[in-house]
Amino acid sequence: MTGPQALAIRSVGEWAFSTTKNYYSAFADVAVDGVFIAPSGKVSTMPAFFDGSGTWKLRFNPGEVGKWTFTLQSRPHNPDFDVSGSFTATASETRGKLKATPGKAWGYEYENGAPFFAFGDTTYDLFGMAYCGGDVAGFIARRAEQGFNLLRTRLHTSHFHPPSGDFAWQTKDMWPWGGSRSAPRFDLFNLDWFKSVDSTVAMIDKAGIGLEMIMEGWGFEFPFNHRAWFTPEWEALWMRYLIARYDAYNSTYFWTPLNEYEYYPNGDWNWKPAADRWQIRIGHFIKETGPHRHIIACHNGPRIPPFADRFRADPEIVESIMYQEWGTRGKDDGWLAAGIEDVIGKAFEGWTGSRIFAEWGYERNPDFENKLPHHEFCDRNHTRRSAWRGVTQGMGIINGQENSWGPWMLLEEDLPGTADLVVLKDFLLGDVPFHTLEPAPDLVLGTFAFGEKPLALQGRSRKVAVVYYPAGGRANIAFAARSARWFDPRSSEYQPAEGVGDIYTAPFGMDENQRPLDYVLVLNA
Image (cartoon, rainbow, N blue to C red; front, side, top):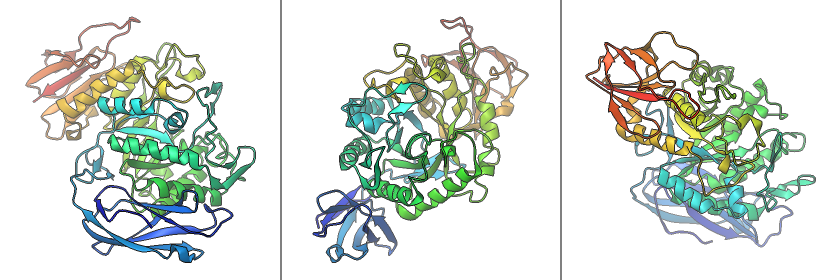
């Protein structure tokens, strides 16, 4: 056996061991676990994984300083795996893993207590793009420099999205199992694929960016739409293997069982109580299998019924909702992204867990063929306004753009909305620290047209208020201000604001389509 003798806490240790026994399927015919005993006596069990050529590997991330011991266990028993060892975990300055902290710091903190504002990008097929030679290293470096701290990724890559989204950039077959899509062997895994994923995960981990690890892609695609073939037994084997390879990484912020989980069990995009039960059951499986206790997340398709109703049978196992709502996205109203906050209010009525505004449409690149018509009017204005609507509900944000999403791969360039999101992020992390703010809808008085009502956040100390005007205009703000400024969410520039009593009128301006500009009012008591 090979492995480290010393290891800093909250870093990944890897041990390798081997056997001379030949298995018909080394992935399925034997289960090997490492049983770790912490200096405090706490016991953690971590699954090992077969990595080819008679070699198994075990990855573990210690959270206590001191001497650790471990032993291997195998089922059925193989004496070659009767191995034990020890290592010393040394102190290290680290923020640690991400934790769900409902009701505190917008729902998330690192282990060291630092608040986490989710500022992410949807890159479902990033692992596939790396496998096919895309400039993933450059993309990750740019996102890290821009301050992105979370990527939504899938451990199974699609090759088509309805109605006409062929993934033309794919130069390799990314089937992660054995056999093929027409004759699958779910008791085997494609090690070339997983070793490529390993390299990308290590790169992301080093960059300090987190991952939402989506274990199963869209439920309309094979094998997830064919549960008679992809049985619970094969699903458990698949998920155990993913946990064995990636649960030890600090960058695994979330385990999300299925993208738009309501596709379970038959690929039909409608809410189904059976899907809720599946999400709960799989959540328990992940918790019982992965000892590092990463956040169990749920990503929705249908927005209603409320999540408190969906998961009432076990409200604590789903720790985070990765919420999807696009708002208006038609030719005449896509710019406004109206209605997002109203749907969020209904969907989270009674919900006590954490949540992120994780999907609101994919900014359209007009230079690309329009393979997905529902993206057509998701422009820079839709990107920016959606993001501000989300943060005014006290939620972190994860955007997406066609350049790095699905059928396209243009990783070297960003669409214009990315710059506006960086402005928003800098504002919330610097100008008015996000974790001191909470939604304050009662600050805005009056009646407004659909989508035009300003949306407010207020500091818990009542010393600051932030009011987003999505369509400019005027509003009565019930906040006794000593000073007031307008913040431009495109340029990050400030200018003085003057109110008549408590009525504040946004600076007048029109965009290139002669639609009113949005502004942010910052009030200090």
